[in-house]
Image (tube, rainbow, N blue to C red):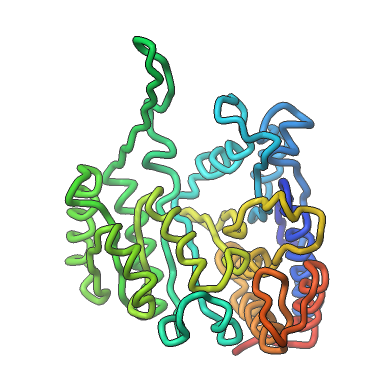
Length: 363
């Protein structure tokens, strides 16, 4: 019986990088004898243009049928009116909420071959291997009321930051569970000196730490974390935090890896269903030019194999193929350095797919 994957290319560079992720997925199928059925759907700005909505019912229905969802990116200047009632990003919010994908996993690993690409010193980033767990379906991005209005001739706006015990407990439990497969350390990030939601977060994190003594849990304020992430990133293993803080910190962490184009992500729930996408956006300035880095998408495919399909060996094969291609000196423009071989989006995907086919399972 085939594994079924919904493929949603999206906007901007989304179709280009997704094409390379699919190329690598097919190489995995050929090498490992796996059958992947792909269900293609329209999402984001492309869906607004075609259907008037960012997430057509037909697209949502095929996502319901799928074992996992692979997304490129959504958005772009064409639809970037803050007053618009229909926006491309609404598709991602609807998928996260619809499938209760409450935990966003963003691994940040510095490949040895890319140490020189980061603007940070080599002695700071060498050996960095951390995982940011971001709560994804609560907080400011979903709180109500959230609106803009005018009153007494003045423009006003409000966003609401709500969190419940249930929402906090379950994402902390994911972080603790994943830490057990790594170095058994969790850093819980909050703003407990200011926000009531963060005080509740810290209280619950403290209780869960006591109930899970085999995992070390520490608390760090978000502003301090922003500094520590760039000064001593090797000290961290699993970092767990609320929605907006996680959004900001994980983008900051791209400096460690050398480029946003290198970062994958997985949005998961308590079951096997997950949504997988690169951390980067649609990059409309380079769309259609074959300059985009597909490795964030390809590494997202590896996460899809591991977390939704349970194919750990195949996931390892993809990650090792990426490492070998980088070690051989191939680079897209965003991670290029003198002496490397500059390749296009398509060429990078082909190189990784070929490395998978040659047989790279296991580390």
